[in-house]
Image (tube, rainbow, N blue to C red; front, side):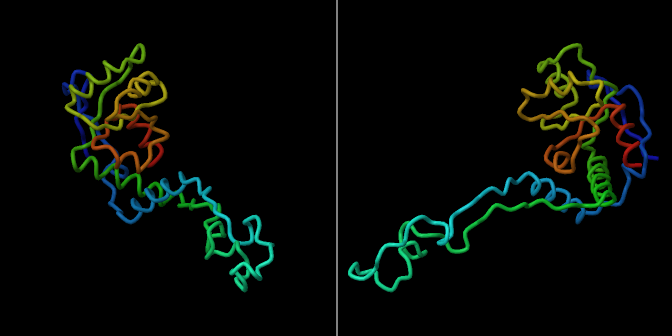
Length: 203
């Protein structure tokens, strides 16, 4: 089993943690990682764009002879100003699905990659008595991390709130991490309890 150093909030190593190889030493499948990212971005798209075709534009029923516009079919045809749009965009759903095994494989791939690149930092705990941006900034500075995804369990809600005002950091719960977020941030800072929660889901 691979092991990783565990740091405290002061940035000092306090112990070693054994990681589950099935999660943090998994085969890296770049194709599934790409699909997972495209999935998340596609599912965010509203798909509400709309333009009117010639059948939907109001008007166009007036006579044509004597106007210089004879035999055009309609003044609401696409070639006229104020006319309809050819192949106009219509509301659509961009979302698609991946099965659970594919999603899990993509998640394991990015976690393994972050570990191999030494961009995954485990901390013993991030228990703040109250949401404090300054305290979270100090922790990230002690860990020598700039752009970070902070992953905690549900008991560390104050840690999530403490990242809200940091431009280069985002806090998420271990049960809502995504492949896109892990790739978006340079470093993943994760608590020991969150590591265990992730292993329980993906092992």
